[in-house]
Amino acid sequence: MLRLQQAASPFLSSTSIVRAHSAGAAVQAELGDLPSWKLSDLYPSAGSDEFKKAMAQAQADSTAFETKWKGKLEAAAGETGDLGLGAAVREFEALEDLMGRIASFAGLTYFSDTSDPANGKLYGDVQSKLTDMASHLLFFSLEMNRIEDAVIDTALQNDPLAARYKPWIVDLRLDKPYQLDDKIEQLFLEKSMTGAGAFNRLFDETMAALKFTIDGEELPLEVTLSMLQDADPEARRKAAEALTVTFKANLRTFTLITNTLAKDKEISDRWRGFKDIADSRHLANRVERQVVDALAAAVKDAYPRLSHRYYAMKAKWLGMEQMNFWDRNAPLPETPTALIPWNEAKETVLSAYNAFDPGMADIARKFFDGGWIDAPVRPGKAPGAFAHPTVPSVHPYVLVNYMGKPRDVMTLAHELGHGVHQVLAGGQGALMASTPLTLAETASVFGEMLTFRALLDKTRDSQERKAMLAQKVEDMINTVVRQIAFYEFERKVHTARKDGELTADAIGELWLSVQAESLGPAIRISEGYETYWTYIPHFIHSPFYVYAYAFGDCLVNSLYAVYQNAEQGFQEKYFELLKAGGTKHHSELLAPFGLDATDPSFWAQGLSMLEGLIDELEALDKQA
Image (cartoon, rainbow, N blue to C red; front, side, top):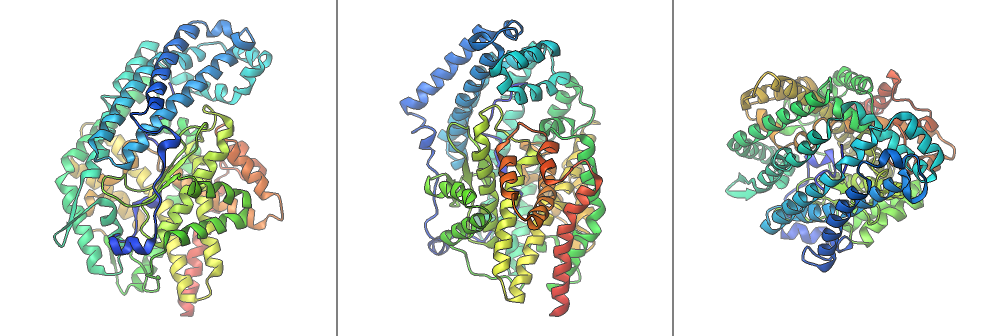
């Protein structure tokens, strides 16, 4: 199964689910100059000679690669130097880098403004051409996996270049049991453009075009979602109702997309022989099913101690017996209302990173100085936030929709954590830099934690401290509890889809069942909320991705506890973890810290930090 890096799969931030207030002209002036990224580091423009030459080179090189190596890999395993297996992998890696660079440019251009027909055409045309090129490379991984283990072992021993790629080769062979006949694999690849890929694009373009009417004004999704954080209960109610109206008007489209992609996945899983609906994601994440099951069970068991308990406290703070579902992310009365200018957000994150290690801040500063960040909210721009690694020969890019709220600062810290990770892992090369999703959230959540702790340590006012702690608790609940609820929802949807097509009502009922269980009795789930599954992009782009957030948050909580208790040497081990990219299993990466994700107590340890913050909030409340 070819793993050509596609621009449609950036690291998506769970914190993008909620955002700040509407950014009009006055607000924009208060925020200061927000940077837009400079994609010229990839290519000057879609019409430039450099981009056209790159497309032509990728086409020629992919065809030449197939001619040179197809049917000859087993023989190459017995050679060394330019005729050896290592040389073939090196050439394949060069193609991955070139094609990944092209895909990144087209994707990031598209995400900059998905409403521009020219961007959509560029994205579609490039994806189509890259798929054609990839068909020439498809043989490589399939043929590699048909070589006997003994032959591969000999090549790894005798060919120094092959030995350099051992982690990638060993990792690739984990796919062997699920590999199909070459012709079927080629059909799956070529049909992806008109199958899953087409429905992914339909979702993106539909979401970008949605408008939500509040008091006669049409707003985009990102701004409307941000109003669920408004201090005015009436504003929150109007935003929730506007979301419901538009989601309901588009239910047929979202239901069709969901049914089609769930069936598409079921067909693929059945042909490949995956036993469980999430096994393909576990394989891609290089994590064992029992580890994920233990995580999900631990979080679900903790619902009453975490989300149920916190939301009951919050309802009391807001003067309610029971909160409406649109009050879940409402600010506390103590929450500061002043907007945070961009430069202040920048310095906040960089100073927190610098206090941990100056080298980490130096890498993050490059994103600001080099034009690697796109921050303004604008029509057609992709909602949410992500860090896209592009390819090791260039550098990552970060997209945020910055509106000056404290959560936006945390989102910036989160995405820059991804960016630092991607820069450090880039030394592994195009084939081995990519990190499984379960570990990809490590640096991002750790960066958030560093920033939060730095801000909290500076806070002396008890009411302001309470507001900060509450906001962090809510973010952690959104990252852990909410994402495991999302995972359970996906499991229910994909399981039910095996018995036939699901109606919008049926999907809504599944959504409400997991939401009620995870949110608890302090949240009133009223009419309209049954449609809110429609806007979650992870369900569409990366089925079962969501548990990676909970995995990463619990892992970082345990990791941060080690950091707090470490006298010295933590930073060096932490950077080695990030530099490893995809070359090591999670067990190897966590061992130096004395952590083991297969230990059932590991997840309880990670959840205990969140529970401790709720304890601190409860203590502050009693003191008031």
